[in-house]
Length: 242
Ligand SMILES: [Mg+2]
Ligand SMILES: [Zn+2]
Image 1 (spheres, rainbow, N blue to C red):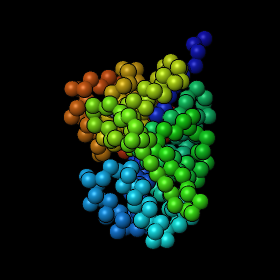
Image 2: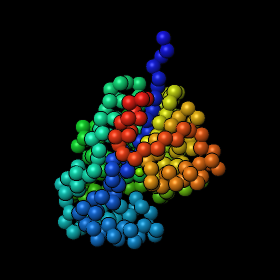
Image 3: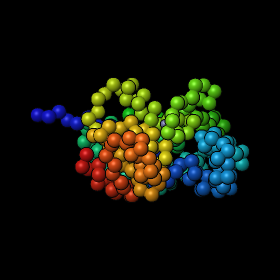
Image 4: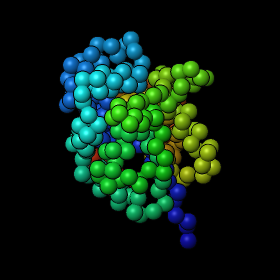
């Protein structure tokens, strides 16, 4: 009898597992002028630093921890995604890893609100914590004052998702038969270059990752199988066949 397949599913969070971008959503809901300011400053200030700075400004004007938590709980998140990951996890033999440029508090708050707090084996993202005063403090995964990552394909200074994926695999020491990556953004291109020909990228259509695959995939030696999807109901369909 063949042994069951060992499988790893890697999830980006914003616009991949969820149907919104956490960093932008909370300001769109609670302080649209800060959202506008972030759009204006995004080419000058590193994005994670900009989120931290905007959270400090929001705190200074009286936006509370409770408001932020509630705003995360109501962020668009498709019920079919909850079903897709729950059913696959319940079938066993699949490990889930989250690889995200959001932060640990945003992700954990949303997962808890969907009953998915035990889904991921690990969540690799920017560290965050609530200060006793109610301020949410976010910092970069890669400390700006320490050694920087050596990514050559355009990851943001706060984290190279490709290096993080390789480090995770080495740390685990498990030989996975199949790795599937669910992503949408330009920074999901680096990690999928590390996937093998038997692996799969489930790429959300109409966003930065699709453009990079089409423009640079061949040139950069992308080996994995590419499958496109638009809505979470299609991920549910695809996961049911894994
Ligand atoms: Mg994303
Ligand atoms: Zn990278």
